[in-house]
Image 1 (cartoon, rainbow, N blue to C red):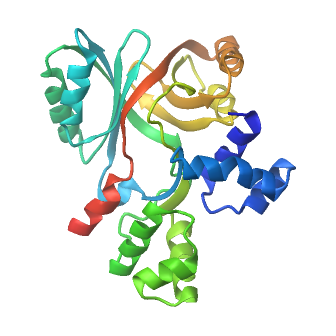
Image 2: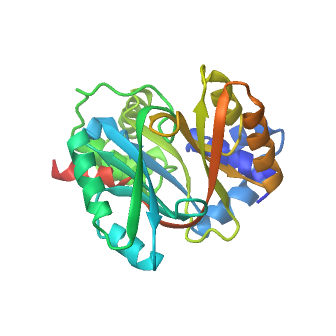
Length: 300
């Protein structure tokens, strides 16, 4: 993947409904070139533009990252993890830990129960826990929505349509939900501006042959702003959060080359405020389903 294509995806990650003309203007190229790079990825199923409901709206107020040390057959362990309903991410990684899991739960009690279930899996020898204190950048980039926000049936139907295709036009959505085009446009804009819904690009990673997706953990001595700024400058940033545990910051960044990876890590390690920096490469993503909550809404 070229650096320019990565920049296109970064724009779509922020705004999945950005037009190809808007992307072209931002990058100094033309609309046809943007279409020639993005459309094949979407058609091949490698890139998905989808909507997601903010997890806070569903009462998922506790998020955590688990690093798992495993012995024996990793496949047996990942199979056992897949039988658990709560993990939104399960990935095999390199480094001192072999598997990472991300959880979005309703309470610390649920987190304790889930950790106990994972520790009970045969072959799991250690579970290291990082609790997210504050997510600084993720699929949901805006302010957290009002927890009292109410979604009616039309809102839910709109979101479910956008889950399948975040770039569906207003006429298509209106036909599905039974609104006028202008009424549909107003509803979608309200959902987006309120922070309840975000539409963005999600890479579909069935294999990691050509991906350089790294997790980065940073412990700081004092102010974390310099480290945050350095990580946030990466065009491939997917996630960064302040955490409680062995790291103060946790990030996920995709790189187009090992050179770019080395440049960022060297910069982080040179910062006086950084006490240590650890990295791991995602080599096989077993589960990545951050949008399961959208269908759960229909059952509430």
